[in-house]
Image (cartoon, rainbow over all chains, first blue to last red; front, top):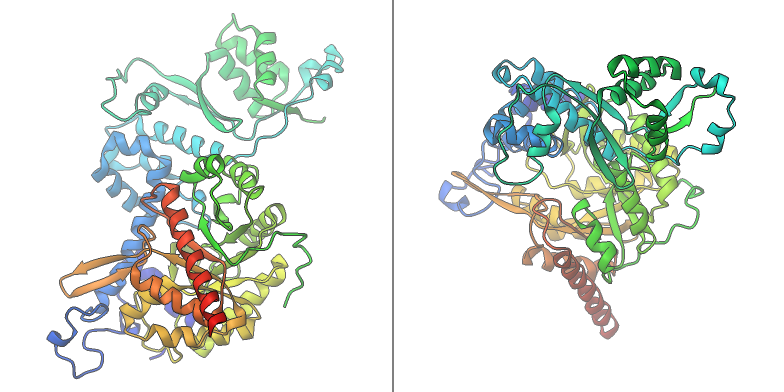
Length: 274
Length: 291
């Protein structure tokens, strides 16, 4: 029976994602297609002698390879940490469970860190999801725009009595990551090829910022006060709350110096108009 | 035919060899500025405007005419056209002012799931009218003509009733769009499906073919025999160069792109291939003057 176009496409997608065989009857078997050729006659000629399963498998392989490569491009450190075989296995499970929903491959893999957090075979690598979060943040920062710096005069013109109410816009690439694991140390150790130095994963957590600076993506270790300050501003809280959070995290935090540096380095790029 | 109102003064893509620009070649291209006619990029890689890759594309754009080639619009899908995707493409066109905008004769998604591959359509009346209306809708939305590229394919559907070349020729009339003729894809599919590549070329409406693609493919060996896969990871093979020579003989010079997507070699390797396309176009012009 002749399938409609939609029915055919759905069967095709199920063949790739679910290994379903409903597509097979609609594919032309190119084994001895013209009826009177012997196997010997078609040998050495391409495109002959292939059963439907083999042909459909070319497409299963393409999707699998394309999606695995896309994940490997975004998550190179995760791949090094778990090894090629385990990475491919994880990628395969991931794309089957979370197929792409966008025609832009850059969007694919956003939920891979959460997937890894719940992935039983990776359970012993408790730090893995946070390393993956850092890599996803790097990927997004690479594709983020780079707005103009904040107009300092605008800040200077504000009545000091109003400072506490100010809300800031952060650079759109900024991602703040707090982990109980030394994720930045792990990430840094895998930036060069070759055997990385051993890392004591019980040495404590880290607070990290990923940000685009010009044509580079930078990953920085932040002191607890600075992290609390930026994290509060990132949640659109006013300056007064951000300062409070910074001082709770570290009572020696130098707030004016911190604010100055954040404006200077374009971590903060604008004021939110009240 | 949609008016090209949005295309301010886009530098036209010249009938010369060009190269597919990939991230691994940004710096080499900008540092060495090779003598190539134009560059083409995958549209989706620049949907995030003002990103780091976008910065390099803008710089390349100051030295070379740019063409945008889409891989994810899923024109043949039976899902509603992805307006978010089209909107991003339109915004990119507005910023880059490409000389040409192309997509594939394929579908990539259904029921919201994307297979991240270029999948063949059955060549039926139903598919013909469906894709034609989608191309019209897309062209109206972005305000530009589209070039539609033929695929490499690995399956044929039992219920297809129209040869691919007749389908493509009928489609571009119905949709009022143009053709991006991938000569390597004709070769790969003709070998996989045992059809005559010359019949394909003969069926192409000369005035509609506005761009040509060339690329390398791989031969995958199975116990049953060999199969050609369009991998874009190798030089253009001699059989494809011969088919290209025939194509240019039939159509005249056309913008010709060297595509290389994985196992990227030095930029100079692509530039040499683009030079070879230039030489073939010059020889064809000489031959036709002599005739």
